Structure formats: structure tokens, C-alpha cells
Image (cartoon, rainbow, N blue to C red; front, top):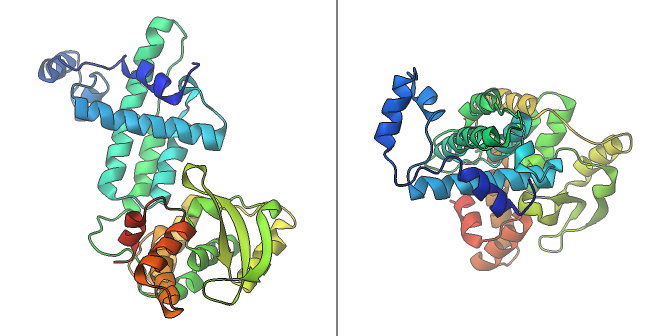
Length: 311
């Protein structure tokens, strides 16, 4: 399909747009056709409220934008189960709340329904099935806790040191030292290395790596000279990359070994933010100055998002 992300999503949405119709009657009709579980009913009914429509379209647009930026696909009709899983996994890596992930996965399930309905009158013979991909991400999302307090590890250094496996150990060190998202320290190439230079805000030498973060935002993350040197050795031969599911398990095992609650890879980002905040204030920055700098270093657009990490 040609057109902007907004246009494509709206075209597909119309296939499930049942606003103004009775959801109750639709459920009864689905049951009459053999649907028994809520999941089966959901596969047969559309969208009946403005609130759900707005929320789901936002997720669909995010999914298509993710596919465009990371997988080179800008056509909603070419979305695959693998693309949907990669999108949902990226949300897990961001450390979103468990309830928020539930909303994302439900929206992706409805996207499957919408795409199949949209394809039917087109006689394209295209069938969409995202169920396996969504369930795989849901299995991974069981690690997302229902957090009310800080997600920071109380001893992130000990956790990172306890990670087993050379690639996972290096990934943990990079997150621990820079506050980067897990997606930003995966698939690192030699071209991204920017060399050693002083941290102008807190002193000391760091090795800098160019990354592209959420929304395509570019920045540099700083690593200790030791970690930077190890990364440099790896990328001389090939990209530094690792299996994210394996990495999650390695972190979970390390949390157990270091007698800490498992907080996911994003917990290292929380820990870094809090330590960096204290470091910058110790070097003379005010609270607001430190918050502004950390927002920039984390790739955030708004300071209130960063402030959430500092509690």
C-alpha cells in the first residue's frame, strides 16, 4: 500500500471500524458462530469505541514506523509476524509497564484482524497470523514486573560482573556504564566507534560510541576505556551482536547469583540514571541542570520522562 503511515493505518482501520454499532450483539453473533473464548471472540469482532480506536491506531502507527526504521518495510500490507514480534520485543527492552505491554499486544492482535478483513475484498490471497509472534513476546514479557517503585538494581556493578557468557557480559557492561537501551548496544559496528576523549561534564576518559535510539534519535554513549577496548577488539572482526532472549536469561541468572530482584535489562538503565545524576551534582550541577543533561544522554525528549528514573 502506498501513502503515509497515518493514511495506511486509517485504511486498514476502516475494515474493523464498528463505532456506532452494538458490541454486545457482535459478541453474541461470534458465540453463535462457535467462538467460545475471549480470544476467539476478539478475532471475530471489530472496534466499537473511539477510545480504543485512538489507542490501537497509535500502536499500529508505531509498529509500522518501527518496521520502516528497523526492517526497511514501509508497507502495512507487508507486515509479518516477525516484524510484529520485533516491535513488541523492542517495547519489552524499553522496560514498559506490564499493563502497557498488554495494551500493545492486544492492539497487535486486532491489527491481524484488521489486515485480514482489509485483504479479503482485495482478493490478494494474503493471510496474516501474528498469534505465535505475539505469544512469544508475551512469554518474554513475563519478566516485566508490575513496578510501583524504582526499577534500579541496588548493586548494578555486582550484577553486571556476575553475567555469564562473553557477549552477554560485554552487553551488560555497556548498559551498566552508559545507560543505553539494550537495542542500542546490539549490532554495533566498527563505524560506530568514535574514540577516546574526556567526559566534559564529570571528568575522566571514556570511549564513545555512536548509536541510533528510539525514534531515530542519534547520540553518543560513553564507556569505560576497558569496556570500549573490549568492544573495539570484537568489532574489528565483525559486528557485536547477541541474542536478546539469551541476554535476558543471563541477566536473570546474574540477579539470582548477586541476590537481587530481577529488573530486566532496563534496570541497568535506571541504575545508571541515578548514579549519573549523583555524579553530575557532585561536579557542581544543579538538579535541573543534571536532569537536562541526563535527558540528553538517555535520548529522551522530555525531562519528566527522565525524572521518573530518578525516584
